[in-house]
Length: 164
Image (cartoon, rainbow, N blue to C red; front, side, top):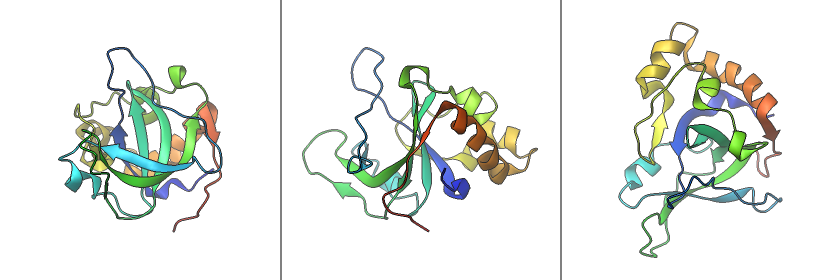
């Protein structure tokens, strides 16, 4: 299990088709590290999380992965593709079954509405999150709570590189 004291962010990732499809790929030692993409024009948002920060990946209102950011570099593939910028991350946790991954309400302990975009959102800037968790001890209380939910619903992966 990872130290979640740097868990501060959440980002929606969506498949660009009409059907409900979850983004995933086989995980082996090398594929734990990859570029998490943002939409072109969101470079400033992609740069906001700090090196070592941890981010929840949301798909279709479900938490499917937890990743940690390696550095502060925003990469641009210059491919012309709409989602050609990104950050280098490593997977720390993956849901057992992406189609039945824990729902936002289960993970956050309350109903929560994120802005409908692919930006990284600082959890403490989300009104629903603050309204619920400020009474219970804020972000540190959430970080402790969510560990138990994640333990039941997925597997922790050994990081390839331990970040401070």
